[in-house]
Length: 319
Image (cartoon, rainbow, N blue to C red; front, side, top):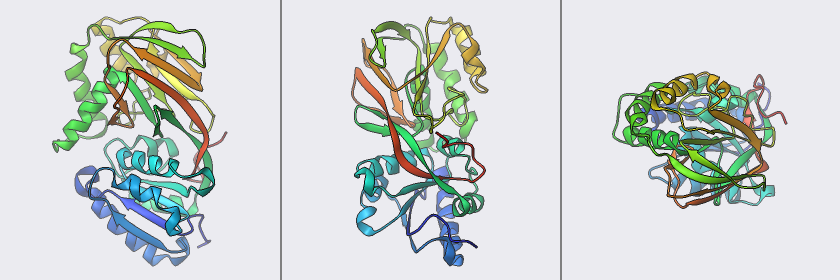
């Protein structure tokens, strides 16, 4: 086996991911890397025990001599690792790699990684190549995949709460059932003033406002189907008119395959900076986690933020 691009590697694993399957994937990863000495220049596996620990570990990866940090688990642990790496000076940041073992796995899907299959994902990493990819930033918090406000954020946060309550549902099914519960509650929306790339603010009666680095959220819903983490832009999707509730349910269904962007009720933009001023605090989520703060949100793309290992066959990461 040719020597990989991983170098000295730190694996940060969430053993509770996907109802405990993260622990099995972590154990397999240790056996895999222990069996193939050419895969790394040495490795360490650390299991997280509490929220926020992955960010701390990633932030200290350089001081311990690691070249690559592997986030093993769902999008939540990837989000923490990304924020830990982004706290480091650019020249000191280790590479990022992902072994997606979670409910949504939207960032892993964006990168073209095998989902919930540690053996295949590790083989992809060993043979993969690093690309410089962007991340988003909102009020100082970084996100690698998704940021949203309004109904879609409320749905995403509901799925997080239900996973914490140990629901048996996961992925798209979990997202759909949360949506069916919350869509009937959407009435007034969350009015806001929005400015794109420093332009004049425009008023929106916001029900949905999503900002994406990659194309999907909610376990594969193609909310911004053309989003690419290597193009230097953030993709946004928002309603320009307030749909009736039956139409909203139809749009939600169409978002599974990205067909909602053809609706006259929806607008999609590619931008580098966004300022949102909401009249009231909206539901807000970043990579599936609740986003505190507001009602003003300043959003921007951070170009060439991280070197991320992607499969050789993946089309993502090409600027």
